[in-house]
Length: 121
Image (tube, rainbow, N blue to C red; front, side, top):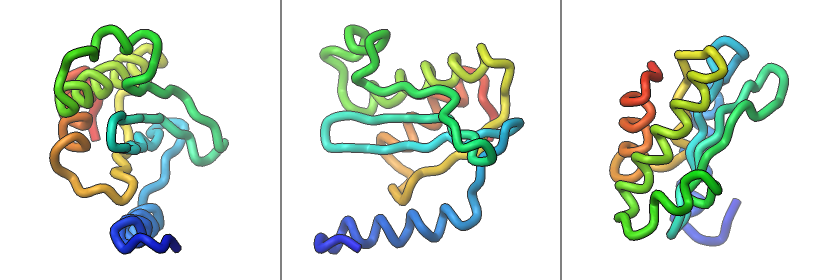
């Protein structure tokens, strides 16, 4: 547990959600991490323990596209990029893991971007 009460609360929410949310080969887990300046998304197959795809605001293909945008707009672009990456692998359904973060703002924008790309969850 962390010394910071806000971080400790997020870790408790994360553990509560992670008990129920598992990704498989047919339906991987879309895991979101939000830092102060960036947002990261990974598609994880928990059965094999492998990451199928990952995109963030620091990804080389997105770095120039997100310059000058607001953080919520950046998150939407990352969601669209991760959605396109998983569709290219022939998968359409995912399980959304908000990783203990509240479902609003950038986390919600990322999920909406993934849905706009064609993912269902």
